[in-house]
Length: 508
Ligand SMILES: Nc1ncnc2c1ncn2[C@@H]1O[C@H](COP(=O)(O)OP(=O)(O)OP(=O)(O)O)[C@@H](O)[C@H]1O
Ligand SMILES: [Mg+2]
Image (cartoon, rainbow, N blue to C red; front, side, top):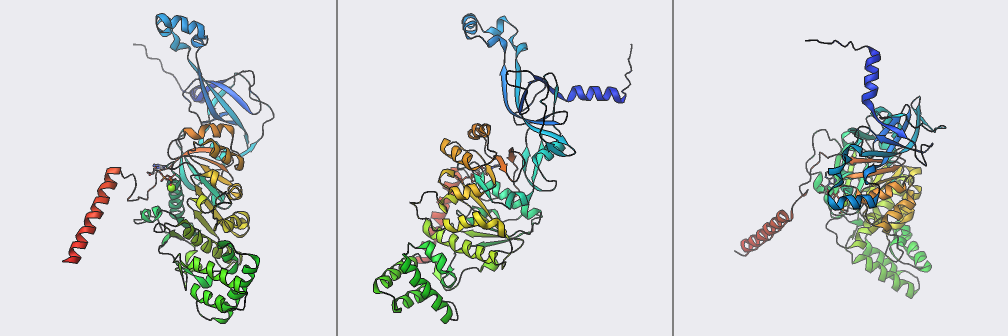
């Protein structure tokens, strides 16, 4: 037998390496290559949303088209296929090819991405970009928050927590696309990395509460759950009260005078009844007194006012603590808005005076707290808009989550410098997001309805280029996760049965 020995010299290794890593060849088309885009014919499997390179030029595959010359002419395909499939007559499979369309991001020089001045040339080899180059281009951070994976490259996506949260974040998608799951992954990472940042989360359905019942190893943040929220009327300043009630100028002036007086004269805490009594006894005009007492009694009937807040802002906003305001038991949307308005106002005012540390306020179902329509009661919209506009100067950061982007206040949406967008199907929602989100290309708009659960487009401040990735699986577990209808039915039945037994036992 004749064995041939091949000696692998460095040159041969290089040549082979290059041949194996080449995934395609640039082709010349009517409109490319130019300095923005190029197309290449695929030699080796390449996925949509892959990052590719031609020497130091980095590009992104934003579309793949398959083609076959045998099937280009409709009349001949129709003619031949009458008798039998075309593939039976001709070797059609051998003529199939795939063309990748790429956006050019720029050229990496000395670790920095530069604009290119010369387009790549037809015939040049295209290779898959390496994770290090991808990281540089996207502005990812080593040891940042691991939020998910770049599926096309089997690469972890680590985002700079500062860039993600400092200048407000909007998380938008249809119901069930994975918004809350994504938030819980962000929280899990912040806790795992032991980042001291205080977080206050408005949990509308109590879903996060159940998530933190069991903490996995390595999570050190303190969880502070605030249920059964009460508001101490002494802490409600006149400027906040004006946001809650449609008061006239005279009414505002009179209630402000009364509130200042009571604050000065009463040493301890007081509640809404004390204020009503003061207004009744005040020397304001009878008509003003009547309408003020009417409005205050109206507030009182919500049943959430007491003498003191159920938690002080100093306890709520603490380094290394995640505070969850649990609104699950509250059905009335006005009450939810009053609670959010109250605590957000106190937090922002205290932060402005440097009395509490910088914080992140996360608001689930934000369209219910800051609705675009002026017709809806928008008790909490004013303060959320203020935090969105001025918060970044003071280290007060907002994260809004919504399944109805079109209903979310546009001021807030446009102040969010980072947008995380999961599956969105409604064209109005897509248009609305596109109008307020930088870097939101037409291609992203086209791709949004086809995203799977947990796939997210991240655009804006947190990343240098829009980025699509799959949110990683979280370690935190919720008891309610993925329950089937049967399981929910059984649980409900067990609950009813237990209630019956309790009643019978009490009777006996
Ligand atoms: N990245 C992911 N990996 C695995 N499962 C996920 C992922 N994202 C979401 N899910 C699952 O999809 C379901 C819906 O997710 P989630 O509750 O986060 O949706 P949502 O967008 O917050 O919906 P809603 O608007 O109704 O609140 C959940 O069962 C969740 O466990
Ligand atoms: Mg949710």
